[in-house]
Amino acid sequence: MEQILFLIFIFLSFAFSGRCSDVYSRNDFRKGFVFGSAVSADPWEGAVDEDGRIPSIWDTYVHSSDGPTENIACDGYHKYKEDVRLMYNMRLDAFRLSISWPRLIPSGRGPVNPKGLRFYKNFIDELIRYGIEPHVTLYHNDLPQALEDEYGGWIDQKIINDFTAFADVCFREFGSKVKSWWTINEPNMLAWGGYDLGVSPPMHCSPPFGIGNCSRGNSSTEPYIALR
Image 1 (spheres, rainbow, N blue to C red):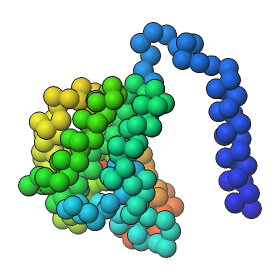
Image 2 (tube, helix red, strand yellow; image 1 turned 135 degrees about the vertical axis):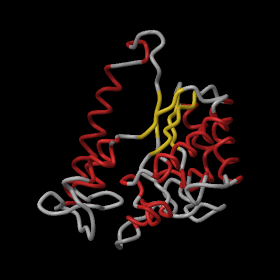
Image 3 (spheres, rainbow, N blue to C red; image 1 turned 90 degrees about the vertical axis):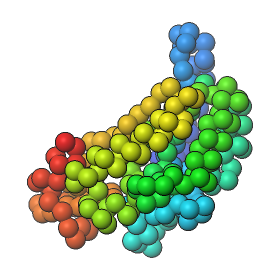
């Protein structure tokens, strides 16, 4: 039944999108409107254990069951040039990516991973070469697992200094070519999913609010602490 419902949803999505494409064109949008697309690092890059990257809390989450993982994902780490050419053919004006913290600074703090740095510089340069403006999200749910293990990640004040240092590296290394930045993607979902319901990493929750299979957490306090 779930598979049938999924197929119906896909069919209706294509039908609706096809109808929209028949009704609207780029000329229907005001001059200067930016047409773009976006990805986050985890479900796009793949290459989770290549070139110095270490696990994130999302890696831990998806490997905690027998379901799909992001080990390969869209393989953007290896195929980003192909993806940029597709964006160009789609006439995109802009593209938003996220910087994988555990790829750029694997331990969460300290030395920058030169291979991770080179990947993002090459990707950004490729976007610009095709006339596509890069937009960057600093954090999209991929906290280095090392920081979660060390002090609990977003519910400890130590995260402030570590995230600030990570952001400083991004601004210093990419700031000359990236003018549009997002700090945290959907911070409400970070708190609600990760620390209230426990349905996304790091899967903290407690009764009666939590619906995830949580072994730790306090749904009454931790969502507010994570967002403060």
